[in-house]
Length: 353
Length: 269
Ligand SMILES: Nc1ncnc2c1ncn2[C@@H]1O[C@H](COP(=O)(O)OP(=O)(O)OP(=O)(O)O)[C@@H](O)[C@H]1O
Ligand SMILES: [Mg+2]
Image 1 (tube, rainbow over the protein chains, first blue to last red):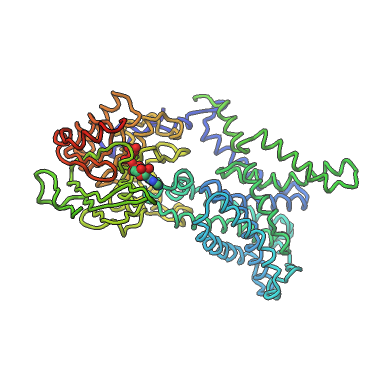
Image 2 (image 1 turned 135 degrees about the vertical axis):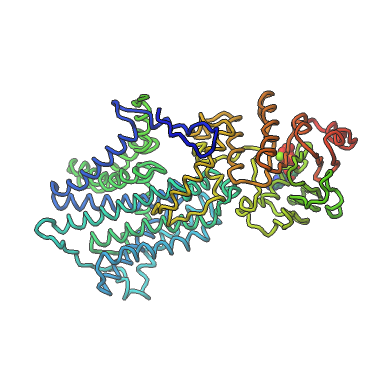
């Protein structure tokens, strides 16, 4: 066993190694597996777009956008225990911030990402303040109201000039600066990939340190957290803000890659989609958000394909039924999401190494 | 009831008491949980607070950690009233506690629970954490170091990485104690730490409480039904019943106090 000898206070026993780090699968210890898997994932992420059609590259890009939005929701719901059915609203605010900056002020797309995040940080924080008084189902209801109101707010005629009203806004497609090596879709993919990697690393840093412990402590036992000195009000509203920032940046990226925003893209259904991705990926799991992102993007497409195969005229309605079936099976097979399934398998396969 | 200055305990009467509870009353609707309780806790003492079920002991603790606001009266800590201190600042000023019915962070490991206990001893913010700035790393190492010292002190090394929800009750109680100590309190409030422990564990707890006071100079306010424990470790005992103080003095004085005897014989406890 590797015991780092700690000499800082005399006579103390050496700090024990986390037993999980000593477990191994196929002779390789779990921390090493982690590194290997992350490396493989990164290599695949970098190489894949060169082997895929532009449309599939676009799909991957959008899955990453979903993953970022789901990660944001997970910080709030999974790690901090605050329920939200309203994250479609922050996604929409992020998308519109970018769209308005690009359409009206001709700002280059990459300069709009951080402002979109900051606008959502503020919006989320401000929404989180009154939400402090609400818990569980009541918070769900308040966020649901936000999700329902957002498309109407975006359509409102008083600021139609800015938002484009019901029509929304059309944007120019960002062009690849290296058209010979990267298509426009590949270029956008890599932009989104870099943003996603930064957001995932920051989220990981956030939850493994002092802030993350406080966030989880509030979720597990708010009174005890407060007694330990955690300022619950500040932590909860800031977590709301950070969560909205993540989802808002995802929204901003979605506007850039679709080159179009319209109010009805940001309905309650989108908020539910994030929630589905969160649950399917794994509550309070950071890598789970990636799985969730691909799931909510791919499964509806697959469902549609399955429904189309029947050749029936009502295939559209049928695809939703197939989607529902997929969901039920998934939740049945992985009751604690993909992350839970992985944990279960590791538990079964790992041996002391 | 009048002001607290009359009931200073023992010999060290010249020094200012660490904690002064003056005429504290708490009402819940029609229920009077505390009805003008006053007593002092001297620096470095172990004070036992006893009383039958429903006497108001936990209610008093909840006032001390600012979970409840007294309807009247004052609570002074190191000479300053705590009634204007925000609840999350109580750890900061040096009051730590454990809970009667355990209030741990169930999904977190023992180590992480103890590190949350050190929250008030650290200061890194969201942005510095998200970027994991170098000073955050240093702070985390210091916090971990202090936590490991407590984990060792409370004999929790073997379960340090286990989620606390998976641990037996007696071990969880030690985790709560470690977590409370992590905030480096001057005053430690223990609400029935012996509850659910077996005979040997209670004996160990007694010596542990004395050690905490002697090694770390922490003043202890101990609520306990386990009389032999209270009498063995306390320098001074306060007895309450139906929200009123019914007796106070050295352990043997309180044990012979007729009102205290009546209160205990009069209940099923
Ligand atoms: N939040 C509350 N709302 C209403 N009544 C309460 C509340 N907290 C305590 N009480 C009442 O106040 C009285 C004192 O309760 P408290 O928990 O302080 O007693 P205790 O001395 O700690 O008892 P035990 O030894 O059983 O723990 C009881 O009658 C209790 O029912
Ligand atoms: Mg009690």
